Amino acid sequence: MKSIRARALAIAILILAASSNAWPQSGKTASAPSGAPAMSASAAAPVSSRQTNRALRRQVYAAIGKHKEISAGNISVVAKGGAVTLSGTVTDASQINQIAEIVKGVPEVTSVTNKLTVQTPFGGM
Image (cartoon, rainbow, N blue to C red):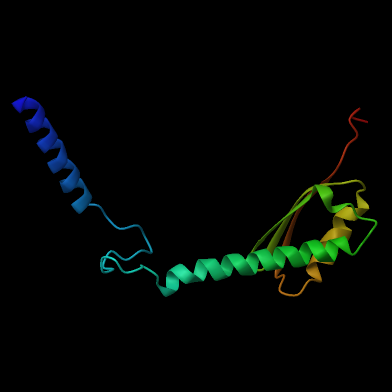
């Protein structure tokens, strides 16, 4: 019985020692008072950046959607800080450059990485 209590106490001491020596993650401050929210300007920036990227992504999809001859169902758009990456498949090779030009015309798009490919039929021909 005494040995079980001694082990439990030793484990508790090890956990306490390990947690007190832990380094804060990069970009986080360890000096926030207890009970207070740890919000800073650096924590708010990724949220607004994420919202901006999502808004840009929606604008790109809307611009592509205005062209009825393009099937945007197989196109994926990733926006990050004005840089847009297109991936997926299109039905015709001429649509690859056409879509890239449409996306370049969207305000706030600074660069376009085009990874679109032509969809091959299931028969492989």
